[in-house]
Length: 344
Image 1 (tube, rainbow, N blue to C red):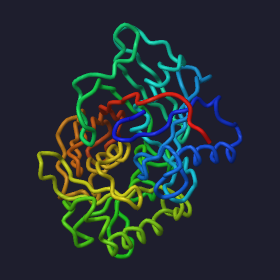
Image 2: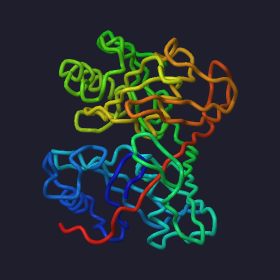
Image 3: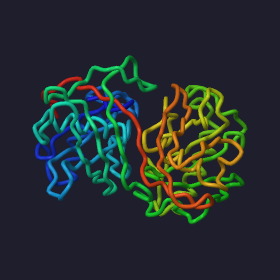
Image 4: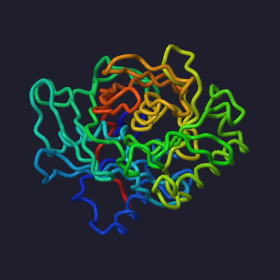
């Protein structure tokens, strides 16, 4: 299935071994263990080397449990540290297609527990006649064409991976002379000014990927700041994501180039966008003087990225100096691509 701007295999948990080592061996083999993933179903890129494992939940008020697994391209290993909000978008349709959730006529709400972090998300899916509708007029940047909208409301994601919205306790830290803001509102992200690395922030992902010195410098910051974000040694982890920000120039509120964590994203991840948008509304972060912030308690933040923009809605409480994100919402789409057997 395609979920948002990502793609991967969706499994029922009961179809995989309970033992994590055996499970991960199957996932790596199914996707392909080498960098081309020539012997599996992966697409040789982090955005197309993902897995969702779903089961009916036993928890009160929760419909399904969802475990996200990133198959690390070329390394033959699995990382279940982060969430993936793009793959999450298709969890609701998958749950309906497989009979875990009964669809209503019109719209169906599916409450999902994200097992990677324990947080909740409410998915609102179009189900006319009690069937998932994939065709529609919603468009998201990074995906061709249009599809039926899926509304994703994140209910409690602050500090979901690192234990705190500001994992270091600071709004600005300094690493190798670079000012950074470490934030976790669903995805651990290190926000940095593109100009501090001698670039504009408007370069293409291909140009940034070819800039070996830039990538070495960004990775050096990541390795040093990871332990300070309560993530331990992050050398072999896909978090934190590293985001370079610059002033918007296409009518949005901030411009981004995000590393996931080594390759530059063609767009920006769902929860990465939520974390970056949250950093923008906090006074005294590295986004000050770069991002523009709309007024009011209900803010729609447009996060520009290489493929266009990503709109994040934030319901904000607290005070002007210490705002609190009460709910983060966004729009995604999904598509069922095929179903059958993958041979391992």
